[in-house]
Length: 327
Image (cartoon, rainbow, N blue to C red; front, side, top):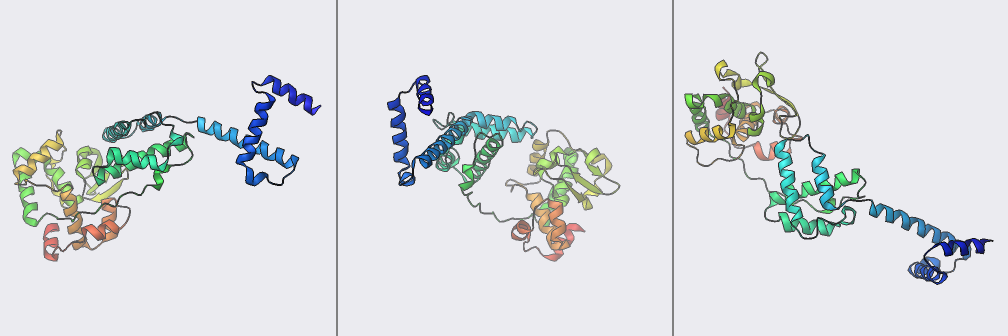
């Protein structure tokens, strides 16, 4: 009876008995170490298991997307992110797709070696570019795992290059005075609040440009509220206004064309070379020396821990200079 059923099944398949026997032999050869000395029933159970696992693996492997499809889908899923963030994601995705053959590679089939070669080919010109490219490539695979297009993230095994922190050089009191005096001129008064928030609240330039003073500043409590949608890192924080609260009422605004105005203010104050986030670094350095409150500074800066504060911002500023900065 069993033989009759097997014969009927074979007749219904586009394979003959010889083909079936050849497949069994090939499987047995690949499993040679596991088939030695086992009887007929054990062999049947082993074959069924091999077939079942093989079918499952085949289905999983075919349930995937190409790298191009998965990458663009991951960007589309972040439609709520800021325009600048989405612009960077698209820029790096286009970089990745320049490498021949990567666009049509199944996401599930990509190895750590392939991902490393992809990063080296498209982002290997600088450490910062490589680090950002690695982060974005990692996020594509994480999105793929959530969609069940792959099971693992091969980028996790790629070590992020260590980025050497450049020494912080806070502005001197004379440089701070030049900036403040320049901001008082009629030409730059619209930027006076912005400057004070960067110098005395440690707010990043990109965050200042997004502020709405009527919503984000509580003048009665002298507090600045950095909301998650304003923050660079997506986390909110509340910062005491201190000297920034002295800005006259008529100057309490954030103007349009902010970046151009900020560059012009620096030029008119005599700065031909400007270190990125110089005002934020100045705030942190003088704060650490004067208030000696790293936990408070951490909250105001929006940092996750003390390490960066201790390694970058605890500088050799004289106490009397720090006192003068705040008083």
